[in-house]
Length: 188
Image (cartoon, rainbow, N blue to C red; front, side):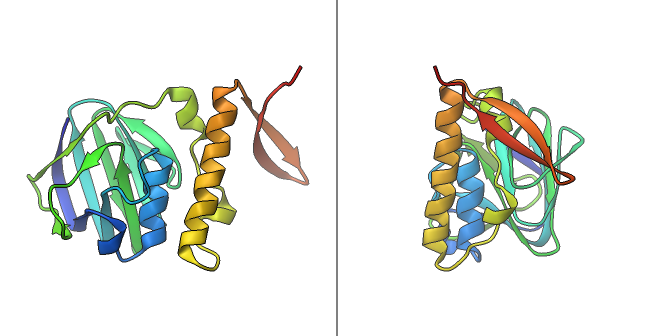
C-alpha cells in the first residue's frame, strides 16, 4: 500500500521511539492501531500533514491535534479508518500512526510534498474494534515513568480488545451530568 504526502510542514517519519521527541505519544499512537509500540510513526512538530490514500487504512493520532479523515473532522486519541485522505495539524507535538507503516531508514526523515510512504496490512482491524480503540482522558499523559505508562496503556487496550472479542457491547451511561462509555459483557 502506497501513501502519498500531499502537503507537509515540520512532519517527520520517526522509525522508532528512540528517534522521537515524545516517546509516550509515539507509543500511544502505535498501540491504538495495534502496531508494536516501537513501530514507525509520523511526528508533527508544530506542523501539519495531509496524506492521499489509495485504499483504506487504519490510523490514529496521539497528542493535541486537529484531525480530519476523508474530509470529516476526527477525534485524536482514537483509532479510525480513512479511504481517501488524512490530515493532522498541531501547535505542539503529535504522532500519526498507520497500521503497518514501514520505514527503511534508521534515522528520522523529513517528509516533503510528493514523498511516498508504504504500509502493509493497513486495513486489518474490524470496524467494531475500531470504535473501541481509544485512550481515555486519564491515560493521555504519562504519569511517572513513561515505560510504566506505556505498559498501563497496553493493558487497557488489551482488556478492551479481549472484551470485544468475547462479544461485549458499547453502552453509554449518564452519571452526574456526564456521559461515559462502558463495554458490557453479559455472562451466563
